[in-house]
Length: 111
Image 1 (cartoon, one colour):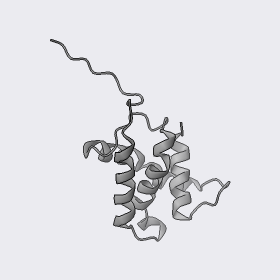
Image 2: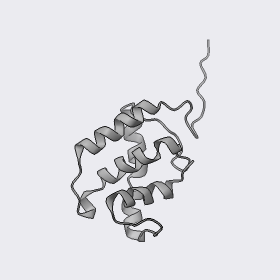
Image 3: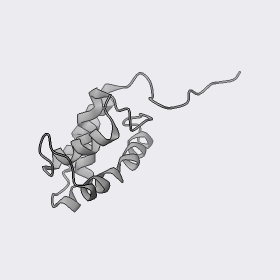
Image 4: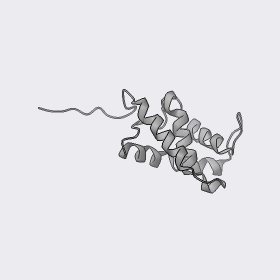
C-alpha cells in the first residue's frame, strides 16, 4: 500500500518537478494534494476506479493514479495536459478491478 503523500510525490516526479529521492516543496505538494480527493471522486463517479482511502492506495494502481494526477495538475507546473496520458491511465485502472474498497463501509442489503 502507498500513502497519499507518496501519491503526491509520485505525481510531482511524473511532472519532473521532483527527482527521485528528493522531497517536494510545500507549495508544490499542496497544489497537487488539493486534487487528490477530487481525483478519487471523479474516477469513482465515472466508474473508472473506486478506492476509499487515499492513504491506503493499492500498489498496482499507484503509478496510473500518479500519472492521472500529474496530468490533471500539469498547467500550474508549466506542462500541457495530454489527453492520451489520461485515457491510458484510466484504461489501466479499469483493467485492475479492485476486489474490495479500502476504507469504505460495507453496504448491506435487507430483504
